[in-house]
Image (cartoon, rainbow, N blue to C red; front, side, top):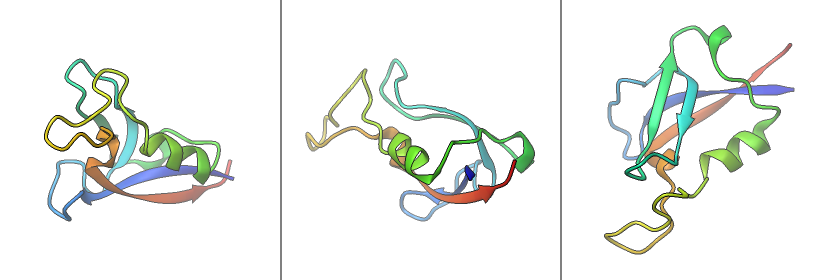
Length: 91
């Protein structure tokens, strides 16, 4: 069973322009090592992950460009800058 990803809020529970929308594309490997995210209102257009495990692993991906956060030295996982919900979809 495939899943799509819905953005709930930013990591602190705050507003983003993507809140309530579905992930079309995201990229943790941008030039600056920050989150690049495109979202859509229509869940039928959202990117489909094979399963929740694959979606969760990708959400926790460490940036290849900037592997650690400069302010605390912890792994830089830009996608975790948003809180997500995994939604089951059927083909």
